[in-house]
Length: 180
Ligand code: NDP
Ligand code: ZN
Image (cartoon, rainbow, N blue to C red; front, side, top):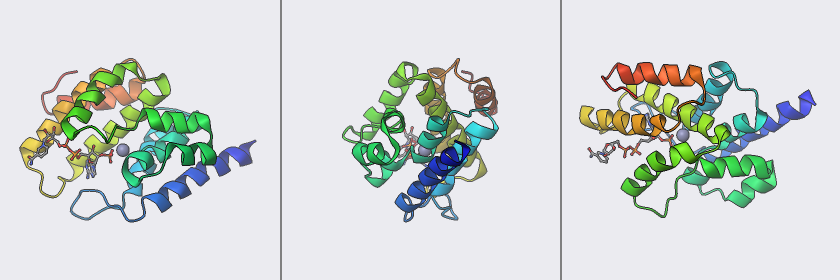
């Protein structure tokens, strides 16, 4: 059993590494994009105390549909219905204009399943830490602040899911005078 779980997780990490191989983060040093998805999975295992394998797999795959053109069906064939559905739940609808997508995240947060909320919380925590660590190329201070304010509205809808993640997020917002 352990061998299978281990293989299932590494299969996702490998799939994500291949799919994101040409992508970089928005920071000055162009960190490989795959660092982000591994980091999100790591937050879930090491800070949130999550051992649900499907959640960890979904964390590793969470940006493949949105950012690499991977289809739901490919994920379903490779990793099963459960994982594919979770990834779908954390994927923005790219047919909508960007401002509408951002609004949808706020509106949909509280309607998500418990497991999708975990991935969303870890994703926001990673991105906000990333923004605090290094400002993305071309971003003004105002744009960073605006991102924190928007993220706080999404996180407000994810409350009551995981204390460790919510405490860390609350502290990051508090640093900027935002209360959730
Ligand atoms: P974007 O959606 O353009 O960028 C943020 C996303 O980029 C994150 O959610 C993350 O997504 C990904 N990302 C990649 N690299 C990094 C990194 N190093 N650190 C953090 N995130 C990274 O941002 P927004 O459009 O939300 O811009 C923020 C705010 O600024 C908006 O609320 C908007 O109103 C405003 N704005 C200002 C503009 C301007 O001043 N010119 C232009 C557009 C918007 P993932 O988890 O998928 O990797
Ligand atoms: Zn992400």
